[in-house]
Length: 534
Image (cartoon, rainbow, N blue to C red; front, side, top):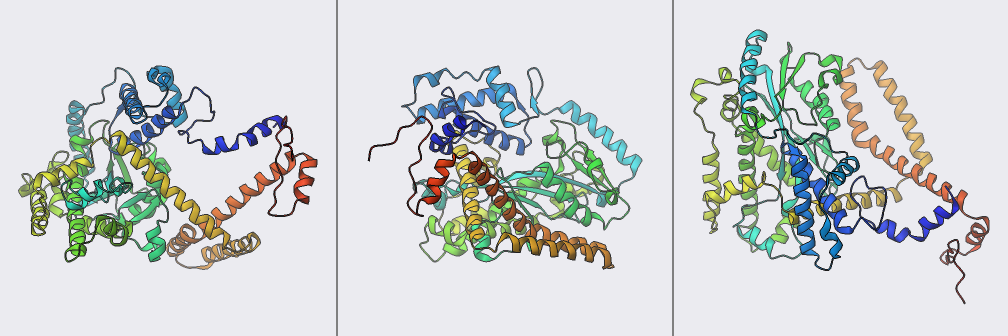
């Protein structure tokens, strides 16, 4: 790299570090306004939400949403240059946005993105023939689906939500996590859910010393709080496959064709799991056929809301607790996990079994064919609980809340969700840096890692139960060793950067820096600059 380039970078380091750019952007130009950066960031959040909901997205929808975001952001920033008004979300912009953001599965012009009823009917016939030929029983057939959960959301007319609207800068309701729920058709086996959040170790976990390995969910994290292929495969190998071994002959795993469910799923599975057969639903048929979408997830969210109501009112029944105090001191993501576990446990076998009636009616008990689920009863309990506390809440409020989990987010809500995710990532990064400053030297870490590898090999070689060994070793690797590896990777990157700038720094300047007493840094002169007068 040329010295002049390095000098230019250092001269503009404040602007470069302060630039908050959209994913994939590698060049800063005067033509890329801050409004456009914000449009692409929020558009990426919106696409994640659509994909999480299993919705197909077309090029026309993306461009229309981009124009709407741009218009909304301009209204929020009236002082922005008039040149920004010319954003048209053209084909050229769309192609570049796709390359920068890495999005895929976008429906191009002329394709149909609506639910395909004809394909659904054809698949039902094929599925019936397949089940008849293969002879699977309901205990052996499983379905899974992902869903987003705004875990702090309450019905709009409760006092807790109204107070939130009156609290400037305090908007916790848009904090979202993603759940993957799975159960079999006979409804006698619920699989441990996968939960993905945007923070690997939230503050509540650190304060309460939470052991993630003992949670009733498989806890994972990434910046989008989204189930990726990697996380799905990890859940499949570590949770699903070991659990369904109780049906040793075989099992059928039915899922939609979401991006996180790789088409070559069978090829990616270990040989020891060859008893699992995977079958995919056709594109755009999820609302029509997917069992988990037939009231199961909806019922789960109402049960979660009921549990949240119960906790909220139990804590605040005899107090004048404010919303801010309740959320800050009496409800966090650790509490949320307990409510998720409670709600999933309360989803009844009738609800789970009757959800298969559209796709596989033969497996549904005759009396369950007209069963509409216990949703009405749950809603009544929530309303009754609210009224007993003197709140103006009715069934429509609860139904509206569940629908809001599925509704498209507004520009303001997308901004809130993006800010929540970035805040959590910064907080986690800051905590990791603090922890690293208090940790032992790199040599000590290398030494203990070498000893751990020796233990790893010894246990695998000499312990009689390799299954137990693998389980314990994986637990240790995931929860302890991985942290030390991250520490070493960060230190390695820092050393590389230090060496790079040391090599490119002019000798005279390096000598002056080394001779300058600590705490009195020298003036840094860029190439072409003149010294200031003393």
